[in-house]
Amino acid sequence: MKARTLSRHFRESFKSLVRNGWMTFASVSAVTVTLLLVGVFTALMLNMNKAADDIENDVEMNVYVELEADEQAVSTLEQEIERLTGVESVDYSTKEEELSGLIDSFGEEMALFEQNNPLRDKFVVKAVDPRQTERLASQIGTLESTHSVEYGEGKIDRLFSILEVSRNVGAVLIFGLLFTAMFLISNTIKITIVARRTEIEIMKLVGASNWFVRIPFILEGIWLGIIGSILPIAAVSMIYYNVYEYMEPRLENSFIQILEFSPFIYQINALILLMGVVIGVWGSFMSVRKFLRV
Image 1 (cartoon, one colour):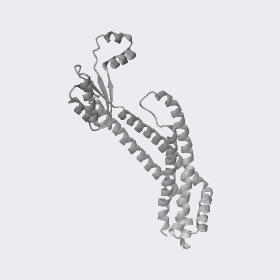
Image 2 (spheres, rainbow, N blue to C red; image 1 turned 180 degrees about the vertical axis):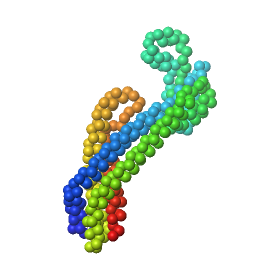
Image 3 (cartoon, rainbow, N blue to C red; image 1 turned 135 degrees about the vertical axis):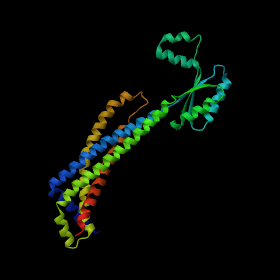
Image 4 (cartoon, rainbow, N blue to C red; image 1 turned 180 degrees about the horizontal axis):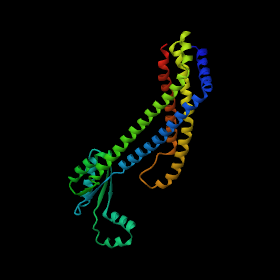
């Protein structure tokens, strides 16, 4: 395509936006509203997925050692646990350290047990894949010098099931919003093109090719998508900034964290802009197609 022809298409697409002001406003409004909903909901779901990952990664096992196990037996047990496939880390805590932790948590009343400590030495074990916790707990439970293994049996499976359902529901809802956005914007753009069907028919009758007719409308779709994404980008950035500033210090010592403002907000903004352009192009392309059959 010649540069002069392409330049003409650009000029015509801008002129058309101005000439069809109310239709442009309607299309931009539809893009803005739908992209705002998609942007906010996507940011929410990605943070929920981050929280779900944090919860999964915090799953660990407490492996309690037999009281009669000596240092050699404890060392052997630690090595056997570390050799198991799927173990990420093994941290050892003596019963004295455990009692000290209880004293810090519940007060000096627990110091009464210092002379006759009823606690056990233990290992805190984390799996590379949290979903392998049950398998590893079963294997560790059979090792010599292991007294018991605690990891929230039953609750862990329910937790993973809930997290999996929440991820799937979130993905379905985001897909549904995107489909709704494309349908709504496509219909809005279609109304714009219907109002200009005479212009399209004249262009076809004087010998214009399908792509010669399409390109100005596709460019219009791109401009509509870009203009319609400006407000959602600004709104989502402002909302997320305020949420991040409020939540980040309150979650500082928690194992659950929200996604950092940067680079997350730039990724969301790029996604909103890309969706706006794709939806605008798709809506224009599909809407103008039926009017090319003259």
